[in-house]
Image (cartoon, rainbow, N blue to C red; front, side):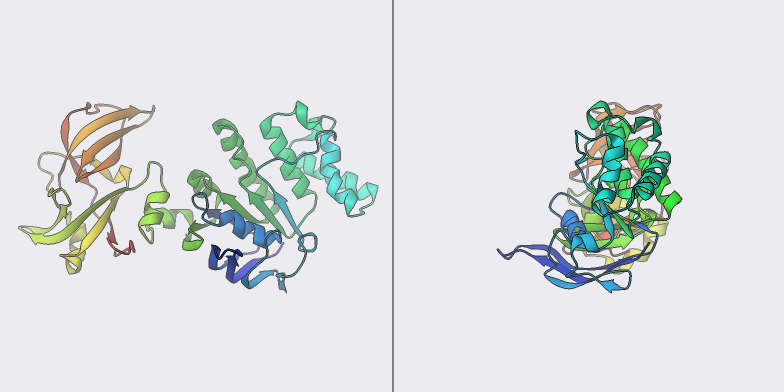
Length: 363
């Protein structure tokens, strides 16, 4: 396997549109790194530049110790798994797995050994004589993975490989890919727009927006300390609640005055933010960091219940407060009812503060 290094890699199209603006990061040898962001953010363009399917406008790309900017895709020693399975319908599973090796001139014995090894790894042994039309979506995806696996490349590139599967199959295939990565110790770059896939699969995540990298970190570091409002709102399901307001000193300590005039006394853990008093802020609160407040709770926020969504082991309560809509994650029992006015408390030390103009994290 090998590392992948990008140094100020850019993609500018002939019409002047910037697809990727100066991407710099390293995928360590054996790491599974995820590129995530909304449609059009540049993640697939970045992957295609690594693969050699998209020309690099500026910057340097290395695979291992070799600069590969001008190296043809077939000579980069990478294997790519696409969103579409791209299997040959007239070939059996075994023939699909072997096809790339035959093109590269491997002898029959080596091909047979590699196909058998990949089939065992992906539990395709009993499907080798079937054609793609006789396989389920999950089985076809495993064949597509197997076709990359038999190559034994330095780097695996996966471009939204699970997006055609239903929710149950996506979950099982996420487990399959994570197991495969642990077993192989392979270097993998994985593209997805699904933040759940990103959080569950990536050892590190690169969050992109409009062709620019917003933050690179481990899944939990991104979740616990997002660098800006975009990352805060993008990662998490349900998303982080974001309310606009201003901090000021009130009786008994700092208070947050929201845009609708509602005031929230801050828990003691937020007192360090006195230095940003009078500054427009965006305040972030994860759904699990809010709760129905007790009467003696000093930090209480009035809110009106709009909808309650029980989902089994928990419930999502949708409320309106502070001039916006928020969601609170709650236990499934003793839930409020739509139309009811409640008061919400905030877990001390769990607020996120961002500059209202730049969106950059303040604390």
